[in-house]
Structures are given as structure tokens and as C-alpha cells.
Amino acid sequence: MWSLESMIRRSIELQAAQVLQNGKISAPISYEDENDKDVVGKEIDFKGNADHYPGATKIWKDAKGSEMMKDINYLANTIRKNGLTEPDQIIMGMKAYDKFFANT
Image 1 (cartoon, rainbow, N blue to C red):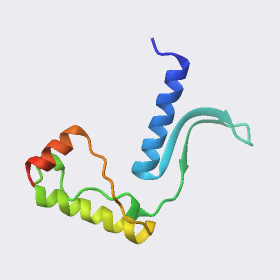
Image 2 (image 1 turned 30 degrees about the vertical axis):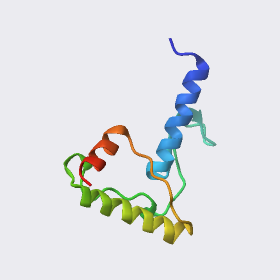
Image 3 (image 1 turned 60 degrees about the horizontal axis):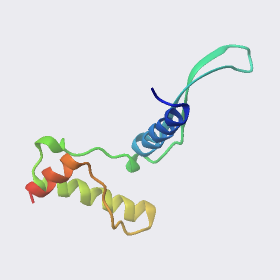
Image 4 (image 1 turned 60 degrees about the vertical axis):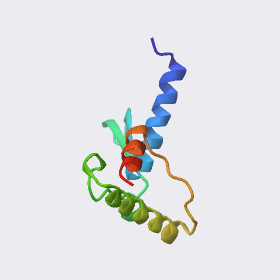
């Protein structure tokens, strides 16, 4: 059974992932607003730049190494342009890592 601490940690991880993926957090909360109306669920929109949440040009499951590298270069250029920093790390899941290096 999940402890309350574990549930809170997973909720924080989910919210962090949501912000990184689309700039929004969906919070499963309920409360009464200033007009005494019940509000269930709330989305917090950080109004991020759409360039910061790009999609891949092709699903990597079916992609070749050159297509994957094109996606990575696009993201790196976006970070350089908007973040004013030089990206020097990439985080991949194990399947993406294996697929990437099998095709390079």
C-alpha cells in the first residue's frame, strides 16, 4: 500500500513532468470559488513559448539515426537561442538510447 509521503512524491514528479512537457500543471483539486461555485480540477498554465515544447519530427520507434539527430539538433538550437546556454547533456529512456545508438 502506498504511504501518504509516497503519493505526495509521485504527485510532485507528475507535476514536474507536466511542466517540462507542455508548460501546464493539471491539479486534481476541488474548492469553492469567490461566487460559491464548486470548482473541480484546475489547470495552471505557465504560458511557455511554444518553441520550448516541440515534438519529434517522427516517432523514434520508426525513425532512423539521422532523423533522431535532426530532432536533437533542433532542440539544442532552441536551447541556445532561447535559453542562452550551451546544452551539454541529454536524457533518454533506455529504449530511446538503444534505438539511437543502434542507428548511428
